[in-house]
Image (cartoon, rainbow, N blue to C red; front, side):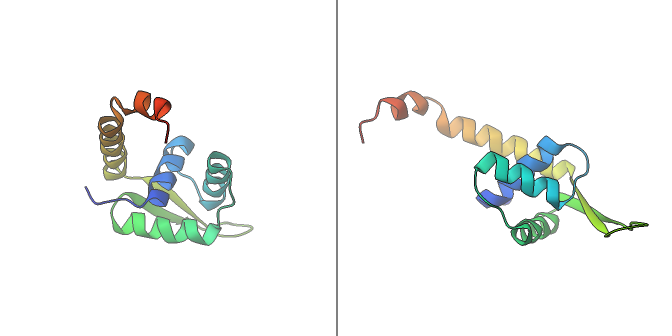
Length: 106
């Protein structure tokens, strides 16, 4: 598994939550809602490009009969496997530490 940047992980999770295919606007809105901060659409496109190069997402152009052409993205099997692996890894890392974090006086 290739290492994911935090923002890439956020995008993969937003894509999972959206289900099926999605384009950048719903991803930006989902990321903003989840993070509580503004997200630049350009940053999402750049990260999606990296995710495609890693084989974790795929895209297709939808030639609109009216309006703008949209690029739709979806998770690949490798993308879903990476999310499962990352989830398991984070669960192992946090095992037993939540209680210590709540009681730590630092």
